[in-house]
Image (cartoon, rainbow, N blue to C red):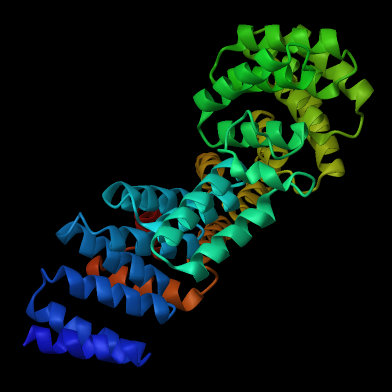
Length: 423
């Protein structure tokens, strides 16, 4: 009986009757809850029907029942790309390739993900591998598409570079772009690889001030502040007029407790670059650690005059206002910081702000309303702007957990969505 519903679902999906296909696959699953292929096919139908979160849920169920399904990993990766969950998509497509090293479409998708992340070398390498596999499979059209993607990424002045493996020895971008990519990689957690690439760059050119500065920043992320300061010193010997180096050396000195040295570096940075909001935020942070909360507030305010969308400046000014016991101002700054972090989908910093906000919140209706609006904003971002999806998920949570507050249900849905994205 379940095979009949399953086959009917396949036929309806073929006719692009995705709603009907979902109904048929659901009936098949009701008869046999362990029917992995039915979950997979229903996931495809949900995806084509525009219900991306439901598709991810079905692919996940299919993989629980059949963890060797490289097609399910690939399709879940596609869905996660649509949800802008690039780390989750990358993990899935990596798994698909491990299960099937000749899966051309998976290499192409991994190239797309790396391109979205800004990793041009890796993107070209994956498109090249996909093109080779498509050529072996005599799929000329997909091979041509991959070659076109490579052409879009290659430097205009040297088209032949795409024939070389992606590696630091064959850069396809300016030094500034290259170092920016390394810092972005370190920011996302791949600090060890970024450090290795910078060590290589300095072996090639021991007089590269920018490479020393970048290596200092990466070493700060690793907590190696003394080594970082040595790199910043080397960078300043090669270029003593670089405000970015002074700013970063000042931050490293502050971490080691040398607050006066940090202030001196940040003052020098401001002499060289008086309109750099990041320097004011950094100096404000040092003032705040020193207990000079008024000086910190002044610097954060100056940073916000330069860049009104600086979430870190709002957050840190909120911390300073909290220390000054000006809770109303702190509350307003935390709210603004949370809103900006939410817009940027920077959930780590968003949660940090929310935790700080909770510590100073009062049980007033105004505070509760502000809390509700922040949760609503974050949930809306997670469901791609479709509030009707959020409402369905909230109603589902209410059925399973009756009697809780509205904020509780929203937090529950947010936690479930983020857990699914991370898994």
